[in-house]
Length: 477
Ligand SMILES: Cc1cc2nc3c(=O)[nH]c(=O)nc-3n(C[C@H](O)[C@H](O)[C@H](O)COP(=O)(O)OP(=O)(O)OC[C@H]3O[C@@H](n4cnc5c(N)ncnc54)[C@H](O)[C@@H]3O)c2cc1C
Figure 1 (cartoon, helix red, strand yellow):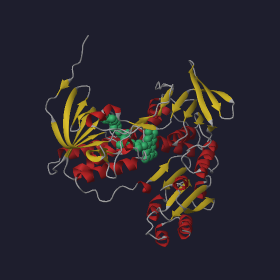
Figure 2: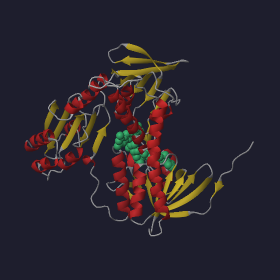
Figure 3: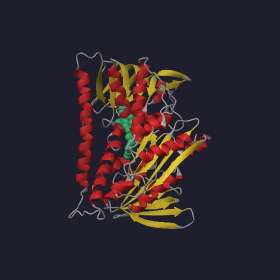
């Protein structure tokens, strides 16, 4: 038998900043590091770009856009009728992979540019391999070929997250999958059960139902999808999923998934006592994501993850060791804040700015915007009503369950719902569900700053209905 022996590189390399993970948090930090002339080592154990690209934000959004195009082309109620419309899963995946590769090539080009530039003081060295702490100043990086040790003045942990496992249900990558397995499917499943009705579950339900090749079942343990959202938003999303052909199994618990040669047999138990047996071809587990930390051996650097497996950071993204901010920083999903691309990027940049003494203002997570890619979409800036109520913050809302909004009419789409609120102790917020819901988002970000008066905002907004609603909410505080 032949054993491949790993080459051990004994030349220790020192960097100003060692980053583990090349997702949105790690990559934005690396580029920001170069801005400040830092010598950066970016370590990646798998796909360049992390879940920001592969098996995550970019690939799922590409699938979403393709599915939306298909569903529009398939409509027969708008005065056009496409003939001979067909779709091939493999070709859809080729398009998705092409988009992912293009983004990775852009990133690689940036890295190569920074690696070679003579006029720059710093630069980025990309290392492929899994990193783990030896102690709080050095790391081991292991790839198939070799093992290296790097040391750093500063470290940034940007190792992201991975799909949460469903106890007792093993992912086989073919018939029982998680979000990482969607790109490995060989064809459109005839029937799919999506286990979990959070954002990612509802997005995949939207995608598969848009393509109209799959009978889609969505398992919702509670009595409403997106349980953290306001009830009207969640009802709006559930109603539109149903219109799109998704069967939502509210208040249902998964008892078993039994594998048969040609199908999966699923038993669901409902809160009212009855049970149902379903036959599907694929089960997609989508019950949230957990941080990706164990491979890093954080204990060797004296780091203590929380019970949720995340790292506690301060407003400048420094990991606290024995209650004190350290030279080890964390950003992105691993930090336990909202699992969003934009949050990860923001934190990555903020961490580097702190390292060079240019942190400026601390991060304010109440300002985050979010977009949920359903049909129609949901867009938001700031806190929702449920969280204001939970915190006991008084607020006044202007709610437009509207047919009068200009959004849905030209799209010949279902009515939209827009909500705005002003609170005395928090900045203003905006939520919209409907076709093109994301369009007023930039103006709404401006509205968040209470110093910008509604009348001024009106000047910037093409959406008079939104402006009026905002003015109403603003005046009522
Ligand atoms: C299906 C899906 C859809 C999504 N859609 C959206 C969306 O529409 N909008 C949005 O804002 N967000 C979306 N997200 C979330 C978004 O992708 C994440 O919030 C974001 O990618 C987090 O970035 P990150 O840098 O923290 O980690 P990641 O992107 O997870 O990257 C972490 C990287 O670290 C690497 N790594 C981990 N451990 C090690 C180690 N020990 N050594 C070396 N490398 C290591 C991993 O291989 C990975 O590449 C989606 C996620 C998924 C899964």
